[in-house]
Image (cartoon, rainbow, N blue to C red; front, side, top):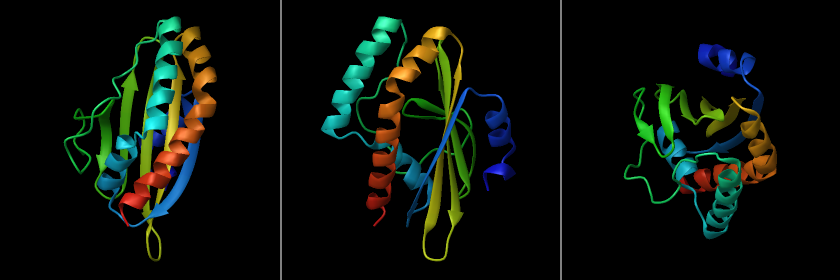
Length: 162
């Protein structure tokens, strides 16, 4: 399914880091995206505090990760904002692509939904393009945490749909 989305193909070719993870659940795409990005337990907030310190030392501006979203469904119109991500492209019940950037790196999150026999498979892709050496250094420091956070957030998001 990823290959059928032209922007995903372009991102796959023009980025420095690509990672895909999958999970299955019973909820529509837009609710999964909101649940995924809203996930912020106390332990994760502590990790975000550590991340902010590292980013500050490197001069990287991070998007605000506090508060909750005032919506239960992800916006699907390009240009709309959901947390730190601006919608780049979306197709209802098919895929959602968001982007956040600063002077050091550009990050895209791609969520692709594909209907299985009894539930929906959500493939979540992370695409990072480094604009400066400090962006690369920062991401190398936080990358192990990225895997933990994304995997945990995806599992929590599908639990919301049960």
